[in-house]
Image (cartoon, rainbow over all chains, first blue to last red):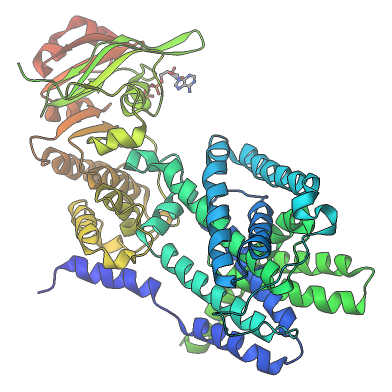
Length: 331
Length: 251
Ligand SMILES: Nc1ncnc2c1ncn2[C@@H]1O[C@H](COP(=O)(O)OP(=O)(O)OP(=O)(O)O)[C@@H](O)[C@H]1O
Ligand SMILES: [Mg+2]
């Protein structure tokens, strides 16, 4: 007879299993450039925004750290990758690694400031760290280009072979591949013991030390990984647009990201991606239809979604699915 | 003489000018089944908060198996086997019972920082967690979210979380509070059945449970130790009777 704990392990495994909507989602990402042959640059930017939003989903949605300063990592990643390409080596993958290292280091250094305080203090410190970096990049214009942005980035061919094209086709596949790999890593993290510890910390941070969990150490790692993910996103943007603007570090970037995550739904990774897609498309369409007032319509859209689904698009969709499923099979 | 499991020296906690723990020198021998009794507000929970590092003492020293732990963090004390339960449940509403218990077993087995393995693949931890879940009779609700459990069962989960950390010294803060009458006996049988090398310090108001369980009793009044002794001595002590005026103490 198999011991009963093995049955319990099977139940746990069930929750972690790859589900069919996930396959649909990623197949759609593969098909998208063929359906939209003229919009590859736009698609690559959605993928990058999705990656950026995953970083907030890890930090806020999974670990529960209120951060309004993810742009610090996004911008630092962008500048690091850009400067590295200009002054050291144009290899894109090497640039990603360097950006990743720099941003995770920032995460490790900033974490102690952050974790000392409560929610609101934490929020302010994340804002402050991003603000300091913004001002530093602004003042240090000899290196960063200041308000004009960092220009003159030349990226070498991918793997030394594949040249980046103006249409953004390579950029899209490159961004999508990086997004998918990071996504797989985060998906695994979420279903790992570490991911469970983060969920515990989010749900009841005061109880965790009494279970033997070093809360600050766990959160530091989560914050640094989140920083690295945002840094990779920033680096991707720098590499694929060959430009870094000061805007990458700005407060409104961080705030917008929070909005996208709330729109998509926090804590399940797909919300971040779906939010990025819906936000980008809505932004694109609305600013075409109504260049002056697109923000008004965007706001209206957001309010509507949050009214109908407090837990964002993914929350709304999963309830819709449950509803249809029950409706379809109930006797 | 052997080293006691717990020894405090001059342990004191003040909130402003209000002394909640007053120069407490408490000794709990290894393997003891000791109880702390005292009226509401005597400072029993505060004492446990100090022992576990949930609160920092204003003065005094705490030793665990002879080692000074006064400055250790809560999780480090748990790592050394000093584990508690809470008087008021502190649980994880959206996690299932099994997941909650896994939090403790994962950590104890050094898996808490492992981010590249599925938790369902950590069989050793699951097996341990499952043992605890079964021990407390929670197997049939193991996959339900905590918030779906009755209060009595949530109480059992609170204790399961502590046991999952494999304590050598277990501090129980009114474990039976809120557990239906019929189930508290069962709960105490589980606690009594813990291996004898586990030291248990129990806070409990129900005198019947205390006298049935403890081989040593400490009486706490106004933050200070009034007296300490065997259940017989405590039951006879006129000062204790005075404190519990109106509450019959029967052995
Ligand atoms: N954080 C705090 N700040 C100020 N006073 C506190 C604090 N925590 C506890 N107290 C006070 O300390 C005293 C002792 O509280 P404690 O919870 O330790 O008592 P107790 O013996 O556990 O009581 P009970 O039997 O009701 O659980 C009470 O008067 C309480 O109001
Ligand atoms: Mg109490």
